[in-house]
Structures are given as structure tokens and as C-alpha cells.
Image (cartoon, rainbow, N blue to C red):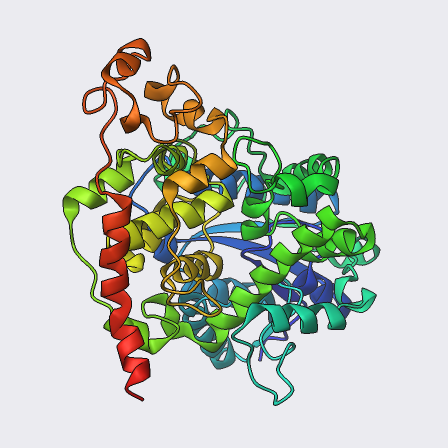
Length: 479
């Protein structure tokens, strides 16, 4: 029998060379410790757009990770193929005694990991996973009865009560770097080899890799104290910009939570709540994987939505006639990003003004968002559609004009992404169809020609939505 030696660390959504739970565990277990990343064709083959910013972000981050590991005395094997086959094969080739990796919670990833674990077991190789993506995973924050929370506020209270320095302590790598094993040089395939091409990441100011994550975090630290005051205003540069780094693990969530915890002011506390929401949605997905396609609250599956392609195209393309909704959708289409407040507004508009199922909108966001994360995206859409855990009540329907006046009062964000409205005066920009013909001429914006009239009347749409959701109310009353 060929003796085994050392281990293999499989990088996935954790593309950084520091504070890495799985890498730390492997190094502590003894070397040599090999590292690998797989451009998984099971994931890449589902992507239809060659200019996919997420793939470029990953590619650049993998390149940076490879360089960083080499500087530590190690290296990174980079493979292109089916991860469920490539990882066991590499582990066998390296005669590794175990594979270490950080846990993933999405159903497709869990199925993949189950297959990898079985293939490794057949070779006599162990498979060890560690918590790294979240502060607390499902089962660590429970109700008094030991169950899962379905309401955010008590979950947050329990989360904060449990948050001690132990849970945000970093996993050091430098002290054990001598255990790292080198890898073959120049084994990173080009983007073109993978079937993708360069995008506008740099033009958008998106900095890949752990260095980019550190720089983005450093910039946010300078404005975090006012986060609670400015975060809902899309024209302000108030959000962290860290969502894509959290998605691909180019920052450590422990480092972020530790900073927010010690900062102890209203801005930091509000931002820490966003990290709690993130854990909450991960826990929901782990407990209820069926929410990927179905309502968290099963009674809402009885709600019948419309399949209106004209409405769908107008929403998708930012041509609804409601400026804030259109600006949000154009921001998404042009940059791959959408401000969080606008994610709620645009999702609510699709479901409750246009009567289109939340699943269709969720899938569109999944295809377009640079920071797409299944747990958070699904949770957000089900919140807006009132079908999810701790969601807004079904009878609460965002008014797109009121939201526009409140969160983009001067129309700065609207003008940035809807150039047809740049000359529309502030008092008219939230409802430009109310301009008189003379005002339209003066603003060089004829409604119905330069910019569409509202595709639906909000008040009439609201009444249709209340009638649509009445099936839920009736079912409850019949119990």
C-alpha cells in the first residue's frame, strides 16, 4: 500500500491566504499541505454570457491567491473540470491523507461535497470541513426550544448575545507556513481558455483579490460611522462595497464582524446587523432548502401570478415609466450592482405592481448581480414578495413614487442612470408623466416618446395585489 502524506486544501468561496479556517486546520495537522482551486465546469457551463464579471473577479482573485501562497513558500494547483472528479483525483495523485475545505451551504454545493466525500472515502482519504463563511451557522443560534428562528429580531438578539471574541478570532496562517507545499508553476488557465473574456471590472472600481478586499474595507472604515444615516440613499457612496468580497471570500467575515463589534457606534451597529441578516438567511437556506423554488411559508404557493411578457421586458430593461425603478434596473444591467434599498423597491414593483412571480425576478438578479449569493438573494426576494420568513406583510406595498421622493429627493441617482430625465425639474422627476406639455418640451422629455408613461397605475395595481393575496387571508380565516 502506498503511504499517504500531508493534505490538500480545496479553496472555493474563500479566496484569501489569511484567516482561513480550513487552511489553518490542515497546517495544524502537519504537512506537506497542498492547495487547489477548481474552475468547476458544472458551474461555468451554466453561465451564458462570456463577459461575466464574476468569473473575471474569481480569475483575478485566484491569480492573486496563487501569488500570495507562493510568497509564503507554497503554491496553488489550478484545475479546470468537474470538481467532484478533479479533487479526489488530485488528492490521490498527491497521496494526501485528507482534504480540507470550508463549508458551503447551497443545495448544489452540498450535493457536490457529498459526492466528493464518497469518492475520497473510496480512496481511503478523509474529508474535513470547517465553518468559515459565516459567524454562526445553523444549529449555533437556536430558540429556547432548540429550533430554528424564523423571525429576525429574536435571532439577532440571540446572535449578538453569543458574539464573544472567540467567534471572531482569526485563524493564523503565517506561523505554520513551513508546512505549505509548492505547486507546479504557471498552471493558471487564461480567461479565454475557460470560455470567458475581460470585462469592465476596473472601470467600475471593483478590486479583486484579498488586497482588493482589504482596500475596500479600509475605504469603508472611513465612512462607517455615518452608515446608519446614509445607507438608504442610492446617490450617496455610503454602502460598504464589500458584498462581492464576502461572496467570494476575499475578506474574512470574522474580521469585518470584529471591527464592527469593537467600533460600537450607531453606524457600525447598523452595519453589523447586515452581517447578522446574512447569517440568518444562510441558516434559513440550510434549514429549508426548498425555499430555492418555493415559498418559505407554504400557503403563499397558492398565490397565482401573471405571466405578462410585456410587463416583464419593461421591468427588465428599465422602461416601466417609474424613474426610481427604471434607474435601479439600469444600474443592475450596466454595472452588475444594485443598491440594497433599490433591490427591495424593484422586487416589490415586479411582484406587487406588475403581478409577476418572485421566482422569475430572483433568477434575473442571479444572472446579473456581481455579488449574487443564493441565500441572501432568495431571502430578499421572498421578503419583498411577503412569502418568506419575517417578510413584510402581504398588504404592505411600496409606492415607487413615495420611495423615490424619500430616498432620492433631488433625483441625483435617477439622472445618473436615466439620462432622458436629466433636464426634468426636481419637483417633477419622481412622476414625470405629471408634467404639462410645455414642461415636457422645456425638459426635452416628451412622455411616451423620450421616456415611457407608467406601465401600470400604482393604485390600481395595489388593489389587484390585495385581491391576489386574499387567497392567503382566506385560507387563514378558514382554519
